[in-house]
Length: 597
Figure 1 (cartoon, rainbow, N blue to C red):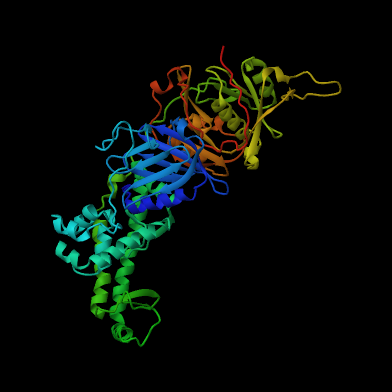
Figure 2: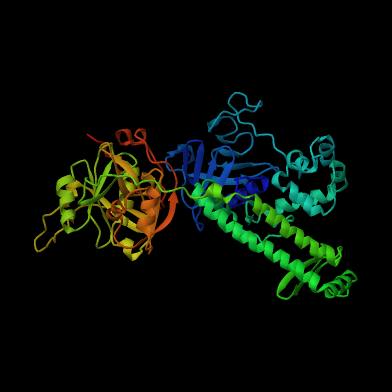
C-alpha cells in the first residue's frame, strides 16, 4: 500500500486539527526531513501530527520522531485558526504570534512565519514570489472556485480522461472514481465536457465527505468515501487511526508485508467467490429477478429501490444482491461474474513470495557484565540512571553512587526503588523527566497497572539513614528531609532497546525518548511470548531481555523499526536532545539546573 495522500485526505487531517482550535501546540520536534508537533486542548486527548518530507502526513498518540530536537518557536503555540484553502495539499495553522504552513506540494515544506518574516523553514522556498525573506502562499488548485474554468482546462489537455481529471482538474486518485460515478461511456475529453456539471457535483461531494474524517480501505487503495469503482467491502476507519496504520504498513519490513498481503489475498479470494455465487444465484432465479426489475422500473415496488441511482436491492438464498434496473437479468449476472474475474486477475499478478520472510540471522552476542545488581539506562542527555532491585540494592545504590551534584528520585508509592540520576553532562528537565518515568515504571505501580503516577526528587543533602528519636529505618529505606519536588502524570510505558556505555553495547529498558530504533514498546499486561518476540525483534538472546523487564507482567504495545545504533550515534554518550514521548506534567514546577563539575 502506497502512502498516497490527495487533497481529500489532507482536508480530513485539517478538519481533525481544527478540533484543537483555541488549544495549543505544546511541543514541536524536528528530525531528519521530518517534523512532529504535539497538539493539546482541554477535554481532548493529546495528538501528534507527523510530517515527513515530501508528502507523508499522519496522526498518532505517540511521537514517532525518535531522535528529534525541540523547535522552540512551537512551544505553547496557541492555535487561533486552521485553514485548508483551495483543493490542494496545503494546511495553514494560524497562531497568536505567527503562522505555520504545511505544504505537501512541490517536494514539501514546513514554514513558520508572520506577515513580515520567515522564522523557520525545513528547506529553501523555491517560489519566485519570495522576496526579502517574506513568506508568500503557494499557488494552489481550487476546482471549487467559481472562476475555475473546467471546460477550458479539459479542452487544452492532451492526456486521456483519467489523467486530465487527475492533473489538470486536481482530482488526483479520485479521477477514476469520478468516471465510475458518471456511469457513462467516456472515450475522450470531449465526453468529459458533456458531463461537466455532474463532475462538479462529484468533486463537491468528495470535499464534503473529507470533512467527516473517515477513510475507507480497499486492499491497497484508500479513499474518504465508499468506492464507486469497487464491489469489495470497505474497512471504514477514523482518519487518525487509518493513516497511522497505512503509514506503518508503508514503512513496514518485508516480512510484515508478507503476512499482510497473505491476509488480503485470503479476503479477496473469498470476495471473488462470493461475487461468482451471486451471479449464479441471479441466473438460477431468472424469472423472479426479471419480475422484480420490471416492477421496480414502473414503481410498483419501493422497498429496496433507489430511483436516483437506478438500483434495487434484494436478498435471495441468503445473498444480498444489488441489481441495476437499466440492465437485463443476464447483464446483471455478468456484472458480478466480471467483478469476480477482475479480482482473480489481480490476485494472479501478486507475487507473494517476493515478501516472504527471510531466514533469521544469528543472534547478537552482547555482554551483561555491568551494574548487574541494578536496573539502569542512559538519559538522552548522556546521564546515567541507576535503580535498586531489592532492599539491599536500594541501600547500596545510594551509598555507592549518590554524590553531591546528583539527584535522588523515588516513586510516591510503597514498593518503589531508590533511583540515582548521576550528573555526567549536566542535568536539566529532560533527564529528570526520563529518570522519573523510569522510577515510576520500576515500582509496584507497574504490576498494579496504576496510571498517572507521581515521583519526587531531592538532592543528596536531603537523603539520610539517620532517624529521629523513636523512628526506625528498615533496610532499603531512606529518610527524606526538606521540600520534595514532584513530577506527575507519568505513564506506565517503557522501551526495550540498545544503548552504549563505555564503548560497549547493552540491552536496557528505558523511557522511549531515551532510545533510538529499533526498540520494543511495552506496557503492563500479560503476554506469554513477550520475551521471545522482543528477543527476535532485537536479534539478541532471551537471557538479555529478562533482567531489564519491570517488576510484574508486561505486554508489547508496538515495535519501532530501525537499524541498530552505530558507533557514531553513541560517541561520548551522545547527550543530544531528544523529545518526550509520554504525557508531560500538567502543573507548573520549577526545574533546578544542576551543572556538572
